[in-house]
Length: 442
Ligand code: NGO
Image 1 (tube, protein in one colour):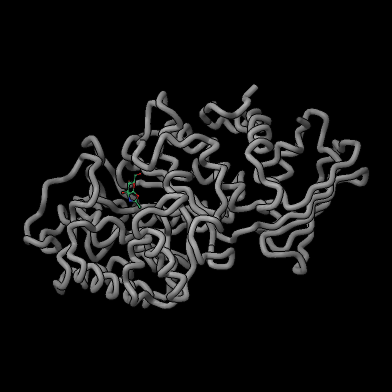
Image 2: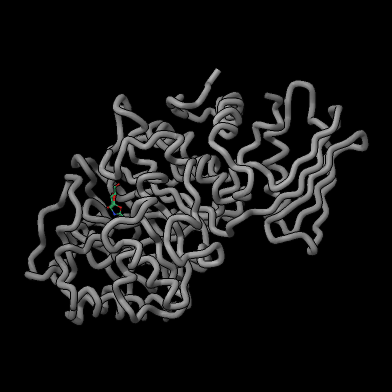
């Protein structure tokens, strides 16, 4: 396969001509008539010209150009490109294991190469609270000092967090902060017993179980906590989204859960941000206007997960799709993968991560109801950047392509060849990808 065919994500339209240029000077203009994040890239005997709908489009054109470069130069080509979905996301769980600012920056560098434009940070969970909150300082100072396996943990100061947000913005990536409520809160309860149902702090949790913790719904301290925390996190967030979790609150009574989601949703919305929640939040029929649901059920929905997701659309919101059996990057590739989990019908091969169509997942959910796609990386078993990369790559590239490229003409048979051809590019960026089965790596 010639190098241009190796482009990931695949451009909306590409026409190659004979010849190469070795004149790398690029002429860039902004043309507001082009779509948001879109661009036109022309390479011919006159050199390289980029026209972009906006600065992000110019940035993406340059990323495409990176992938087009060969030993012989840049091939003559005309590309017209724009994304299918405006939300193209990855998620990193920095709670189960803590990742430093530098490690997050490294991940941001890699996301940007493939036109991913959101990084959702899962900032709190049972094992650790990772963001400093002035009004409740022990959340980070006490609740941050733990992780799966009992390590040191860690947390971001407000200055650290601002660095991450700025580094992301330079790469046209929006940080989406998540404070997971009202379950997944053991670390907060360790720091502040008054938030716990019995008023006593539990011991720090170092395992990988889920669904055993809850805030004491209805207590005034809890309302004050949620108001302070969401207010401070919103103030640190230039982006439009504020994720409040809502998943797996198995210890919360249904009536309490519904009352809490109504209250926390309203508090989150009052910060001016668009509220995001995992699909369980869709059990509530009193969501703030425009709340975004994040679906993490299966590609073929089971139980009532689909119904809960569709509830967001019924209430005027859109969906982010993260089907766990396709895009959960923490699933093993196959039986031989040393890290990762298998609960989501795993193992999850590269083909599983690619071979699904977003509009086919949920009945009654069309293209326009889908804000975009996101690949979460939960870190119960992941502790280093190298491990993170072996799980994310190459499956994250499937997500990048599904979220960017047109659905028409997409096939696993063609993609796997293109992915194999991208190996030298992955190597050039020092990416620790897994040479997973099913891809004709050379
Ligand atoms: C679930 C659970 C997380 C786990 C993850 C592991 C969601 C939304 N809640 O996904 O707490 O870490 O699975 O794959």
